[in-house]
Amino acid sequence: MKSIAACAAALLALISPIVTADTNVAGPSVSKVTLPSTFKPPQVFKNANLVHVISLEKNFAKEQINVVVENDSKEPQDEYFLPFTSQQMERVGGFEVKDRKDPSLTGFVVEAVEYDPLSDTQYYRIRLPTPLPLKAQQTIGISYHYLQALTPLPAAIEQSDKQYLVYAFSAYCPSIYTTVKQKTEVKLPGSDIPEYTKIAGSGDVKEFPQKSGAKLTYGPFPEVPAGAVSPVKVRYEFTKPVSHVTLLERDVEVSHWGGNIAFEERYTLYNQGANLSSLFNRVKWAQSQYFNPNSYALKEMKFPLRIGSTDAYFTDVVGNVSTSRFRSNKKEASLDIKPRYPIFGGWKYPFTIGWNADAKYFLRQKTGDSYILNIPFLEGPKQPEGFGYEQVHVRVLLPEGAENVNFYTSIPESSITEVVVDQQKTYLDTIGRTVLTIKARNLHDDFRDRDLIVSYDYTFAASLRKPLVIFGSMMSLFVGIWFLSKLDVNLSSK
Amino acid sequence: MDSQLREIWATAPGTPFLPTVGKGTQFTVGFSLLLFGVALFGGFALNRSFINIPLLGVPASLALAVGTVYMFCAVGVYV
Image (tube, rainbow over all chains, first blue to last red; front, side):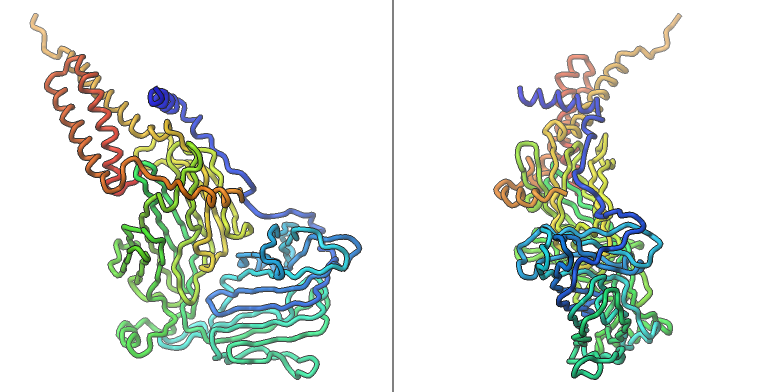
């Protein structure tokens, strides 16, 4: 009786596709706050002590600001502003704020401030979980990164040369508040640092920076007024690829009939390192692989996948690329790929990889017809030199007829630019699969394996849509054949 | 974004989704059903009477419908 009711409901659903097409997503898609064009952040805080750590060990610039903020106004305050130039705003990403003394404290909200698009100074607003009382202090750690911030110098080199990158920053941490005490530490990948800007020291130190191995330290500086900057540059050796993905399209297709989750990732990859100053020499390249394997060309990528992954493939515009290796066992699943050619600075390599996995590793039944899916938001290559993503489009293709879509992701909310739920027709679909698209920008490989949790409702009736459509077509065929067999097509004799 | 989903996922660990027909048997099930459906279709083709529509047409259509879905899955197109 129950199955008859389910079949009837499924048939009803077929007749009125609009009912099942009703999906919704909770929450805002973009983390932004709009303020009047005359906005000026109020001077209500003071940075009692600040340590600015710039990490250039990978092929993007990662910055961490550990600051003791003090409420310097007459009322409790909870809005802390961080300034950026408009150029930096386009490349900054991965904002995360933590309380340094109590890492379990949550509730920091980071939002980009939209006020005057023509102003060169833009802001991010950090809302503290609880307003800071008068003269009280809180130690916060702010971390973010810049993509495309490293420039090769010289811009063109020979294919076996060392590559040097330049990073420009301010020795004083940019802040709209007075900073009583601060220092800036620059961590580099090695001690080969041929050039760096020297500035006048303070106290016993004659000049900054102080160099110790692969680290430069500007400061400690005495009190610095609000808005003060001291532009400096550092040029250092980085004979590794500056891999940058302008667009990653990641599709995750959920199949209840097949009990499968299919992953496909399409990369538009560039090496933003130094260009070749002369034509590429294949013989020289083959020789250098024996005596000097270090190169700024990208020659292989390793994708550690979830245990249980199967059926991996690697293609590019020409077709299947055979230089790949896939290991999948009880302990690991790893896809190692080698592009068709070494990717030197300025070169582009678009490619596609994909694999399958059993649904039981990612999908759980919440209650009745309610399901919950937990997949990694990003699963790109794990390279020691890092991997940057300018645009990431994650599409979760849920089964046809899935509704009440809701999601949560542990990547920073400020990195998400758009969330859309729509439909897409694939094989055997009539109204199309429900597709959740999340667009994010300026991420890097440290965010790989961050969770994306999607919940949705998928009724038994909706799951019968595909076989019922085929059943209906076959029945019409049978009736049609019977009807045709009854027609008298003989020529009548008069 | 719904931050409660994290706790819901953590508190629902014992019910992983398992399909009705596992990946290993999808080809067998799909192929058998398609074969059965085609056989009944052949039976109907030999005797195209009205009574054979419910007698042969309905089971054949059901077998072909479910068989097609499983055959799609078996060849790697997970619908």
